[in-house]
Image 1: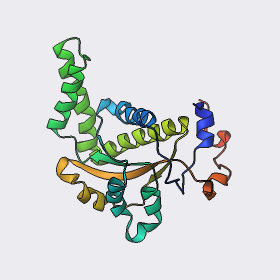
Image 2: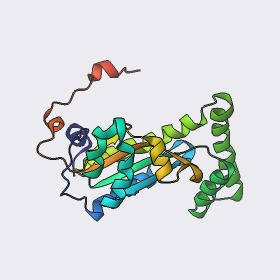
Image 3: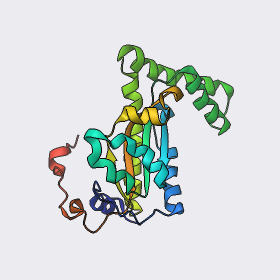
Length: 218
């Protein structure tokens, strides 16, 4: 397993996957654990994931790469696994109670009053974004992107290649998987697998702004 620095230097946005290589069940379980255990503001967890690990499933996701997004089609069909990242459209009371009840079942509240206090704190932050900032959907999406970042790093530490893609037809994904009626909407696709020897992007030097440019010590 790579160190974090090694993983970050090694990873890149994979442009060409080896269609003959598959991620092991053990490694992919680790990636699913990341999806489930990732942090979110107030532990709201406003995410859902559609996962394809066979040709049939990948073909369904690849429907979102038609038209102007055809350049991304092989990144879906040749990958080992593909994940559609979805966000809650809104965090309604039923969803909030489901999260709260799961926390309760997992033993997070020593006393019943702590459960209701958690609910009120979560609603307070949600209401700020819903009524004052008027950007509740964006706030929920922000939490899902935190999850995506954790997945990309986790995959790299396991030596698994990845590419996050917003260049897909999100409406097509919503319709294909009936996401909106379930309270969710697609926001991006992440393909996972192993690079080919011919992937030009793997041979290019990594380019990032310098530490001095992006960090100011307080």
